[in-house]
Image 1 (cartoon, helix red, strand yellow):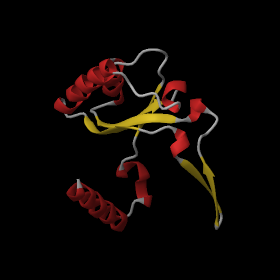
Image 2 (cartoon, one colour):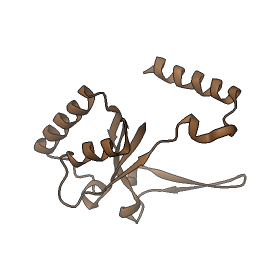
Image 3 (cartoon, one colour):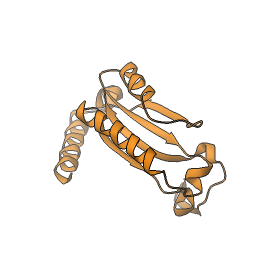
Image 4 (cartoon, one colour):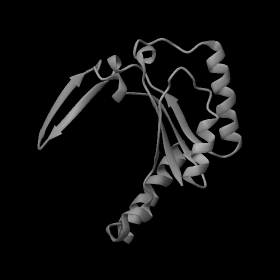
Length: 139
């Protein structure tokens, strides 16, 4: 199963305060463990929301709002995409993450083709397989 690990933003990440060498070293060691275990598929930090924008879709209308965004608790500072045997395994890995100071993490399963049932027709499955193969070739 794949899970998305969402690292919530805080006042420091939104202010653009970069992590210290100590934190980067600890996070690098943790990421190495994830990679060696075959768990980590992707992982990145995100710039503060002031460098981003939001697009709201309403019918044919598109409304763009430039950052920064007020609700820090609703923002992300980074993410991982993990491949694990179970949700419990993901929780155990996450407990070992080198966070402190009130960092909040959200963990959510990623939809797999099987989750869509009959709506995922053989033709749509083939399309999804082609898309994934194209992404893997690019990486």
